[in-house]
Length: 369
Image (cartoon, rainbow, N blue to C red; front, side, top):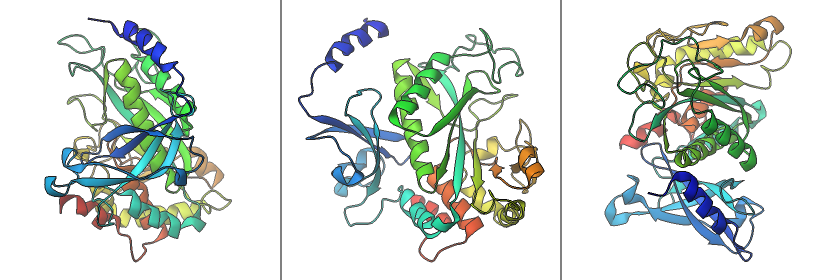
């Protein structure tokens, strides 16, 4: 069997071939299970705007997004990025899924989110998402854990340095560089509390761009991990027992919150969030009840709570924000497997106000119709 290193060397000689002016565009979409899928097409020239990218389609019956008798689902480009795998003028295209009757596919939550972001654009809402994830090997064992056993208890692994304290740094570094090359607004990385669990941060991003950037960062992570024969899990509690779960902490601020006296607006937002605690949890990721237990740096699902520098609360106000009197807050409830369009959408709906033609809870309910 040819080794991974040899395969990479063989592929390299083909990647160096002249494309004769053509551009490869990898179209990415979100399927019925909240995973990314992609396929590639050839373009005659390099796109300079989203409008240069043609609409395309795929077989939705093979992705759980359409019935077999009416299977065509259309891909409408919404953003594009430089391709860190093919390089050159080649691009990766993020798309929305639409039905052939001109309605958004029921798993397309971006469309409703974008309405809310546009309606409240004067609030200049910024987000920063902290995406945690867990690494597994190709046989579904936690990556680099002892065969049939467990590593030492949690403690030395968070932001760890050195053999036995950190695993798969090569995968993480490769992903970081791929995001930077692509133009994704990745802002940092760190090893997490459970060994072989990592986090990357994306943002700050304004409005709808937050969901776009996180989905592209996830796609790039999966693609990079392919090359190392590593599997990525976004499950919020991938391992039972005394091990931390995985979240996607959501940092939020409006223009008023970021200015002098902004604490008043933060407190107003927390009051609104408390009243819609259950509605938010419904959109904050599947199996989140396995993670939000009140242990392992989480709050209980039963009641909303907030506090300064409190990582056991539903929402944390950083101590620096409390001291300065303005800034942002961190919603610690979202799970690692969230759809960021649902989370950022309901956040804006709650703290900035609902609009007549967009309801994020109803939008989520469309999935089961």
